[in-house]
Length: 288
Ligand code: SF4
Image (cartoon, rainbow, N blue to C red; front, side, top):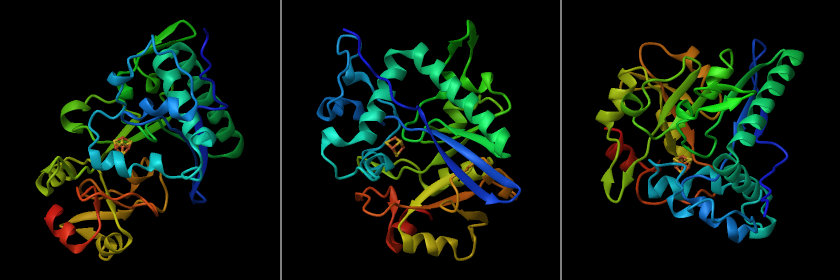
């Protein structure tokens, strides 16, 4: 039996107008994060269970229970719709199956869509930016593929003039230090996993000192608090919600990496593990 994992597009394109000189179109790939592919059957998505052991699939190997619960994957306009009517999640499952089981087709389509985005940007005088881990944490720098009979080490190699960025929970200095020049990563703070703090302030500040930006999720009040002085412990803080173009952040840097403060989306399910800094107590516990 042939399985159909086709979707109308792989990447979702959003306009990002920072100012007249900085006009971007951002293409984002949304997959099924962490172990969520396991739920595909409840959404009516058929897949080849002989080709894939779902128990072994995890697209976010460094995810904590808390980030998996609060992940933006669970948000959006279809959040409360019936499983078999949730078109957004169905598309994310299909794209993920395509990536895992129909790799050649997946990369062929991804390359075509990125090339089309580049052409569109040229016509409209925008700059293209690509975010492949919209809802996943894949090491794209290690995902080799073949396109038109040429082998590429990664997608960045095929598009050397396009900037890519992603958030990651991997230790960038250890696991992801050999990155293509056109791939920018920032660390996404995790909080606690099974009661143990994954990334204390000492660790976060060591990243900032190494010119690695750190994204931190806050409640509205706590985000306002850290943005009051635009600086925290001598590190510059920026509002990460004004635009989601972390490549542009590089132009905002002064001496070190930036703290990128992001507000948790409304109705996000919040746990007690400190992934989202939601009150003074958590602020003092995790950022001191
Ligand atoms: S690592 Fe990121 S994408 Fe993956 S589950 Fe956690 S918050 Fe979601």
